Image 1 (tube, helix red, strand yellow):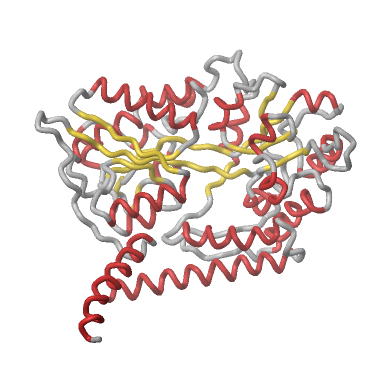
Image 2: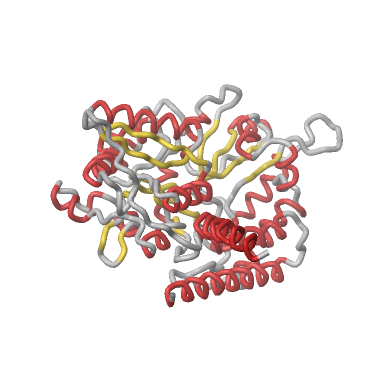
Length: 442
């Protein structure tokens, strides 16, 4: 029996280590193997995310970068969005094969800085004459911690409203403009929502995909601050989320999560003319430009007690222990530089964080949609980033699960649902901080 136990213990220990590193509760920091050929060719691993348009953009960038740097080859690993990218990076680091260059974004940035994942970029920037002032200040600030630059911005997006002009004209509804409100959304939405084939089921909805945080902020609510303090039980948050729920279950002008799960997602519903209005960043513009069945344009977010929208951003960082720091920097410098940034603006997929590139290419190819491009700039002006802190990725995941009870209609008392969101957020953050404190003591 003792002999069998001794044989089993190493396997149990290995399983525990694999679980800890895979879940991000433990990091095994190990310098990756030298990825260079005998001929001196350097191979970089690059982790990013994206749909087919973002994949195509990254492949274009990589081809141009490799053409200009014939001694460097880039292996791109594409993942399924922020959560998948975070897990992939963690797994690669734990396995000793960390990416040389990776996407970074506000959810993971504070945590990865604290864990020492990122390589400081200040010396490289100073050497090559690159200043943070080239970017919009609030973007550059996102990737700087305690005066040290750990990343450079790729893009920023305000959530805006895409609308089907043909449906608005057919239903006799005025186009949304800079003065419209959530009251207008409800009023217009009732006209835009229809049972087209008279089978007793709604075939055409008015609106989908406005982030729930926008509703909270628009009615004076708060979510988190930079220290992780939670305000989800604010009266304004409950008021805003009540409207969110009402659009689905009272006014019936927005498809429920269940309906989207059983049919098309909201973006595809917009493309097929089943939703009159859809909210997202402009990364969907290349996809929407392939629409042939109707004309579309963009508008600002409707106002509640105030007009506000959510801003999101992403950037690039290098792994602290990359065996090729110079080449990793060259890739980041190219991706965040004028040539690559002008390309992403010309295809109108991502607003550049570089001031001059953004301003000079806002009206590139004006004959192509969207026509109302000023909407993007205006939305940035009244946009707001969600507060991010160490642990915000895990907290957000748990809060979203609690919010789903409101969105699906299972929790009809929205104020109680908001209190539950706060409880879950505080409990999750306390557990995370307690676990990190214990590991720090060890």
